Length: 239
Image 1 (cartoon, rainbow, N blue to C red):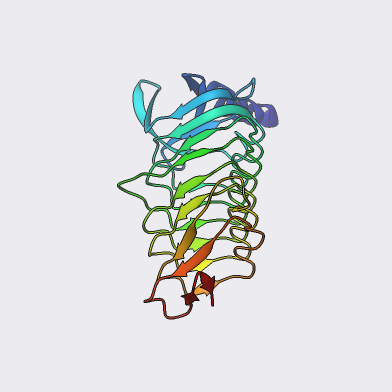
Image 2: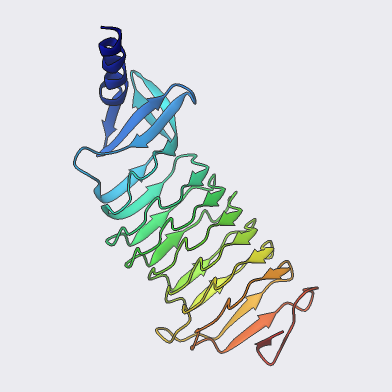
């Protein structure tokens, strides 16, 4: 009887404790005192908006997280994260093949490994233009996407291994806060799908991995800021 009672409590928290707003399901997390996005019974699709606050049990509660794997392999076409979420977890949107647009809030400090990998139609990604706490983009985070123009936010420190590999880039703005760019970070991305001129490595970068720009056939030149203490360039060639 005690075991049955415990099972019923767990069932009530996971099912009866849910709320649904505009097609998105939330569950209250008592440990953190807020809501997390949880799985949809029918799977997610279409355009998704995650607001800062959602009404739950008569009160507006903050949304602070997304349960792991909720959107993975889903049919969503866009997602706008307004909530104060601090991390996009590993594989969070992995292989969402219909996903074309993402907008994240400035509260995100880390985009995990493979977070948007193999989102073949992802061509637009908006970081907060005025406020961003993002410090890390994980390994393979945007590999095999359709991104062409990317402006990374100030404050970013680490671009992981193969983070933007095979993503059809034509331009990318790397802020003067980035310290480390991992192995193959842009490998195969400047490959002739779009006309490309150059990439600038800022003075802050002190660690460049191997083959960062390998197979970037359309990349005409790599320029290093004159103030960089670790690397240099001459006539568009990186040293």
